Image (cartoon, rainbow, N blue to C red; front, side, top):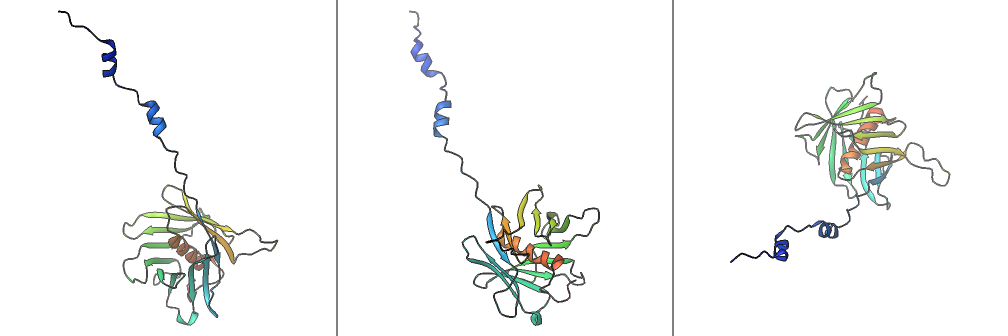
Length: 214
């Protein structure tokens, strides 16, 4: 007896298209996280002290640097709001203020980054170069003008991961250069970005938190 072919059964065995179900099951893409905008005040909250005070967009204290000249030992400590050390910035010996290292907490060994002031008349916009100490490769470069509060930190792909910008006038009052913004992109450590701000002040600013660095 001849086998009968059932068209409907054959159709059920064919692969099903999942285009419609795939489209229906897709959730809308998650919007990228916004950058973190910090307000940097080039002043310590402590009396007779140099440093920085950093606030978030809500006005909460985030970072602080407090430095007494008479206690200067060639290092600067970046602290959180409670005064806990986050990073320590130390000037490399015999570098004349051109070479610095960044350590976790108050550690004195195994620095995370080595930062060197970049002086090249062929590249006047390049301010500093950052090398990762565990690998020895160039990972970040600072370009722009710190004295004008207009510069950026670029990673290896030339993407700006942090920027220093002038802060807009408030009520028609010019805030000058002592108050500015630090814009940090998602995924980048805001504490590290602030450490670079401190270093730029040491290299190019009008005052130093460490005696005889320049």
